[in-house]
Image (cartoon, rainbow, N blue to C red; front, side):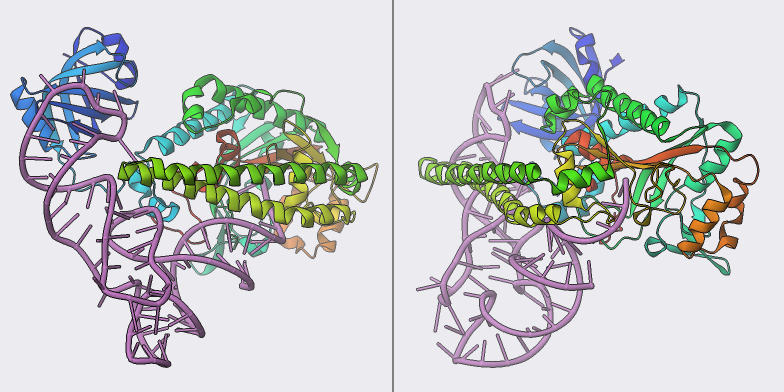
Amino acid sequence: MESATIEQLGRHEGKVVSLQGWLYGMRKSGKVAFLELRDGTGICQCVVEASAAEAFENARTLTQESSLVLEGLVRAEPRAIGGYEISATKVQPLQVAQEYPISRKSHGADFLMSHRHLWLRSSRPAAILKVRHTIIKACRDFFDSNGFTLIDTPILVARAGEDAQTLFPVDYFEKQAFLAQTGQLYLESACMSLGKVYCFGPTFRAEKSKTRRHLTEFWMVEPEVAFADLDDVMELAEGMICAIVDAVLAKHQKELELLGRDIETLKKVCKPFPKITYSDAVDILKSEENRIRMENELQLDKERLEDMKRQQEDLESQLANVSKAWKQEKLKAGIRELTEAIAELERDVNNRPGHIRLAAEFEWGADLGGSDETIISRRFDKPVFVTDYPKEAKAFYMKQSVDDPRVVRNMDLLAPEGYGEIIGGSQREDDLEVLRTKMQEMQLNEEDYSWYLDLRRYGSVPHGGFGLGIERAISWICGLKHVRETIPFPRTMGRLEP
RNA sequence: UCCAGCGUAGCUCAAUGGUAGAGCGGGUGACUGUUAAUCACUAGGUUACAGGUUCGAGUCCUGUCGCUGGAGCCA
C-alpha cells in the first residue's frame, strides 16, 4: 500500500492509500462519519460508512486533534475541500486527544498566544510559517547566488552595536556580556577578507515597547560588501526585496489568499524603487501640497468611518431576522469585529490632525517619526528609500557625506501600506581619523573598538551594508497587523512562554 | 516608562446596585452526504486578587496583578 500526503492526493486517484495525521474536525450521523484529517500538507475529508464496522466504531471514539492512521480509496469528489476525498476502510487511532482547548471559533490574542504550541496547528499560523520559510530561503538563495559567503557572527558580545540602553545583559563567568543586537561590526571585518558576506541570525533588543512592530528577539539578515558605496547597497537591497516578493508570489498564492492579503499591491513591487533624500522628505512633510493631500485623505477616511457605522447598524437590524442561536452569535461576533475596526479607524482619524501638524512643523535635523514615515510611504505604491539623514540622528559608523557634511550616507527602506521601516543600512565610514573624531563626539571609548578601528588601518576600502528585519518583512508581505504572528514563538516584553 | 480600556463557565461574550445567563466546546442519546451539520437532554462559576461603601456589589470606590490598544523608541 502506498502512503500519501494530502497535498498530493490527486496523484493517487482510484487507489487505496494510507494517510496519517490529526483529526481537525468531524461530523457524524448514525451511519456515516466525515473526518477532516490534517497532515501538515493540507486538510482532506475522509468518509467512514457504518458498513465498515470496525473503522466506523473507531472513528466514533476520535476527538479533535486525535492522531490516527487510516486507509481508504482516493476518489474525486466535488463536495469535498480540495476536490478529493477518501473512502476509509480502516481507521486506527494512535492517541485519542483530551479535550482540545482551541475550538474552531474565535479566540482572543492572549489566549491564542498562551497556547501558541497548539495554535501552530491552525491553518492561519501554518500559512504564515510557510511564507516565513520561503522568505528566509529567498534571502539565502539571493545572497548565495550572488557570490556572498555566510558568516555566523557571535550572539554573546562584550558591547553594544547599536544602542546601549536596549541590551540584554548576560552573566558571562565573572564578566558582563550582552546578547547581540547586530552582527554588523563583525561582518565589516569579514568582508575585508571575503568581499561579499552576510549573516542571518537572531538579534536581541530590550526595548520597553509594546507595539505591533516590536519583538525582543527577532531575526535579521545583514549583508556587507567591500568596495561598495551607498548606491551599490541600495541596488542590493532592491534586488533582495524583489527576489523575496517574487518567491512568495510564485509559491504562496493559496496562503496569501487564506490570510486575506491583497496580492495586487504586492505585484507592483519591482525595480527600481523610488529614492528620496531626508531633505526631500522634510520638504514633502512641510509642503502645503502635503497638508492639502492629507486633509483630503482624512476627509475620505471620515466618510469611510460613516459607511462602517451604517454597515454596523445594518447588521444589528439583521439580528432580528436570524432565528438560529449560533447564527445570532456569529452575527454578533461580526458586529463586535466591525466595532473594533471602527474604533481603530476612529483613533486613526483622531490622531491624524496631530500628525498633520507634526509634519508641518517638522524641523530639519530630527529623526523621522513613525507618523512621518507613514506619510512618506503612503505617497508611493512600492517600497521607498530615504537617504542622507542628519548625522546626529544616526549611528557613529555611518559615512559622512562629501557633498553635505551635515548628513551621512545612509538609507532606510520604508515598506508601503503604512508598514514603515523594514531595512536600515549605510555606507560605512572608512577614514580612520574621521571615525575617531566621530566616536569622540559621541563619547564612545576608543579602546572598546580598537579591533574595529584596525579595519581602517589595514587597507581600508569603501564598504557598506544593511539589515533587514525578517519579521517586519513577513508582516508586510502577509499583510498582518502584528509581528508576533510572524515568528513561531514570539518573545515580547510581556511574554517568555511558551 | 506614560496614557486609555478590559478582566464573569474550557472559549467568545451577556447581565439599571436587586435570583449569575447564552452560544460554542465537553458528556449522553437520535439521525446515511455532512461542510462551524442538525435535534433533544446534561454537567460546568470563590465574577482576577485584597480591602472598602451599601440593607444588598459582577456592577460603585481604593490598591495590586494580568492582558489589550495607543504614545515614545526601533528592524
